[in-house]
Amino acid sequence: MAQPSMFVRKASGLVRSWSVFDGFIYAFFSINLVTLGFFIFAFAPYIPEGNLITAIILSGIFIIFEIFVYALLVAVMPRAGGDYVWQSRILGGGIGFVLSVTGWGWILWHWVPLYGTMLAYNVFTPILGALGGWMNNPWLMNGAMWFTSTNGLFFSSLVVIALAFIYVSLGMSWYARIQKVCFFIGMAGMATLLVMLLASSKADFISGFNHYASTFFGAGDGDIYQSILSAASEGGYSAVPMGNPAIVASLALIPMVVFFNLWPNWGATLYGEVRGASDFKKNFWSMASGLIATTILAVIVLGAMARVIGWDFYHAANFTFFEGTSGLGVFPYPALLVSFLTDSPVLQLWLLISMSAWFFGWCGTVFLSSTRVIFAAAFDRVLPEWVAKVSTRFRAPINALLVMAIPSIIVSAGMHYSENLATYALNATLVIAVTYLGTTIAAIILPYKEPELYNSSSIARLKVFGLPLISVTGAIFAAFLLFLFYFWMTDPVYGVNEPVSYLYVGALYLISIAIYFGSKWYRRKQGIDFNTIHKSIPLE
Image (cartoon, rainbow, N blue to C red; front, side, top):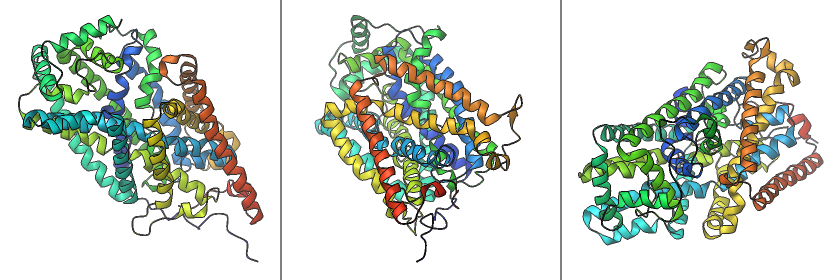
């Protein structure tokens, strides 16, 4: 009787469709200033002693070491599945499956509602509010406010799922085209935003804000700008002056800021489909340039906003929004605030629509990287073989995509309509960071655990004081992750140390453990040994 092969097929069936530039755009969008950045910056007032700009710069410096780790591992094993492949081949199949599939699969279901919230805050509400205000159409203005309701947020999450499904199902080549178009439109929108800020004064903004906050969103009459500052002060908040770096105090802001910039390696699971992925320098700069460019852009935008909008007001508007005391009533999305600087409806709508390209170029990231981890686990036969099916037309793992999309609908409904589930999922960022720690440990021990594999790679010559570069940079990044874990687990301000959340996340890990050992038992009956599979590296 013929013995079954180790892998589902001799080769993955995926193709190298992306250039290094495509990898850069993906990294740039993965640490998205307009979506993730502006969203998490809004929580900075809850650590009032810290300076947001200082935290952005310091975190960016440490995240460079993350890029070293991932770029070096990609050069050694450029395979679809990234973290799963590296961990399962270096640390062992069980560890690799449990850490990677939980961190890249199940937990990403819980990120979809966050993407939906950003779609509502950054796209639907601002654009409908502007259109409704200019057309004096109450239906559009009410629609803008509806998207801030539970039903509106859930609808936005469904739109995210639909868009991400379409993007990923079209394959890497089409996804590259989509993100390029969004990249150039989004950058044109960002250039518009900066020019408007540079050409305006604080008095211009205060006048425009008071007028359009009332016209677009029915915020009432009077000095709404000052009312927001007063409400923040009455709530006990005052911002640290932008000119005060507050380095020590800003360390506590870093565990919050990394919600935005910890992800330049988000495309590492895709490098089996990137041309030239065995070249460490290309890998490094495709990720690092995304991080560096985003960090510089964040500092420039925040500086320009501080001059025109006001540093105190920006933080006060965010603080009062989440405290429910804002006179504006909607999320103080920076592009929306800047649009108030002009009386031209064409320029306002151009700014809001072009800046929405930052969302549309980014939303596919919620599934794209995850499908490659799910696919790789199925290719190793840990998950059912049908999950490893690849579309012959678009070279996309459609069934792996369904594993991400269908549960996301259920989880989104639960998180939007149930406060309990939303509380359970607070540790979503921490779970991904735990996956990164597993990969980092694998990187540190790679030269010693798998010397033949390491020494045959192009990175073996890269050393620091005689030690492997991958081990040194891995140790530094591991220390940074432990720093984050300490703050997340000891301070309630980050909203991730609820005991019930740990229990919920623990249940997700237990599901992964059960799947792995159940599959291992089942495959052993078929004559398939996981230990043998995880000592081999599949062809692309």
